Image (cartoon, rainbow, N blue to C red; front, top):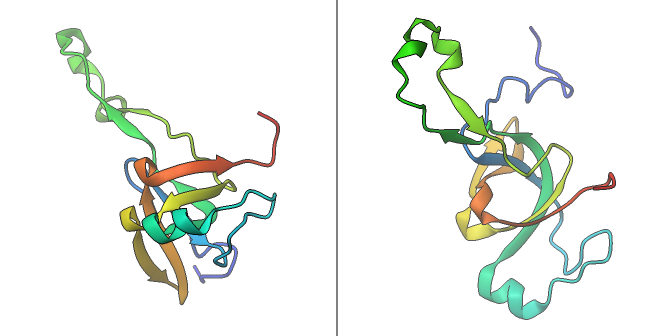
Amino acid sequence: MKITADNKLKKLIVVGDRVLIKPGKQSDKTASGLYLPPGVQEKEKIQSGYVIKVGPGYPLPLPADEDDVWKGKEDSVKYLPLQAQEGDLAIFLQKGAIEVIYEEEKYFIVPQASILMLEREEDL
């Protein structure tokens, strides 16, 4: 299968409570008009970008129920989903993020705990 602009990220699997974010240009305000004061940016290094992929979430502990032994492995792990969704604008702490280059583009892998706020286009 040839890698194209449309499918190049399909091979990536984000694990756990992490989110893949494509950074936007550094600005002191978001597109919708939310201002990020200079004091906050200097102290904590705030970054923003769009959520590209989301991990499955936080794994939940399994109940120690012996009746479920017959079930297959596919039923063995349950996850608490993340708040972030693909397409959200995320404002996050850069110190918690890991910068990666994939297919000559820069992305951040960010744990949900480092995301301060999400901006979603659809009505909540």
